[in-house]
Structures are given as C-alpha cells and as structure tokens.
Image (cartoon, rainbow, N blue to C red):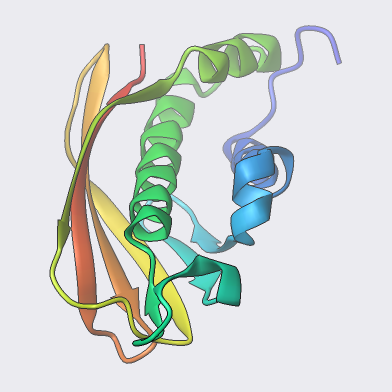
Length: 156
C-alpha cells in the first residue's frame, strides 16, 4: 500500500484496531471501543476479579481507572491527529502515531469504583501543533461519575 491515502473512515477503523486489538495492555484490560467518530468516543471496560483493588468492598483498583482514562484520552488526541493529517499517506500517519504519548495525567477519584462495567468519554480542552489537553470522565453502569481525568498528550 505504498503512498496510499485512505479516507477518514478508514483511518478511524485503523485507530479502532490499534487501540482495541494491537496494544497488548489494552487487550489485557479487555477494552471495547463502543463509538469512535469526531463527535463521540466511548470506551467500555468490564469489571474482572483481577481488577479489584479492595477485595472486601469489591471496588475497582485506581490503576485500572487511571489506565482507562489515559487510553481514552489518547484515543481522543489520536482522532485529532487523524483529522489534521487527513489526506496524508498512511505511512506518515502511522509514523506520527509512534511519536505520540502521554506527557501528564491527573486523575480525581470521586467515588468508589463500584459497578459491573464502566464507560469513559471525553473532550478536547485545547489542541495545538505539539500538545493536546483532554478531559475524560469515568462512569459506572449506573452513570455515576467515578473519576475524572485531565491528560496532556504529545501530538506533534
């Protein structure tokens, strides 16, 4: 596929595959990307016995929460990069992905991580040529806000 220039929907499918299937840690978490487009990005993670931090109270470990917040922020930042690079050869886009990463992440734990499954959604607070700042919410299956995160991601 030398110098191929896929359309935006193909790029979103590629991004979906990278985050859900190609990243070993994301596979370990068992994340499911429920929606992925310019308006809505939603990631689901199910509670597993291995994810429990407080076994007496059956509460999700904070590391799982922060990981899902971080990867959701990364997906949101990646969609922005895809939009900016739309029309570029696929090789350039993939090369750009290899240079992306989390610079900073703050997580506010607001409630105990109780639930059978959890959903994260977020939005861009600011994006520039080099960094994007993303706000993400982590909610349980009753739509209770469990945690919120703000991440800064290298995008250029």
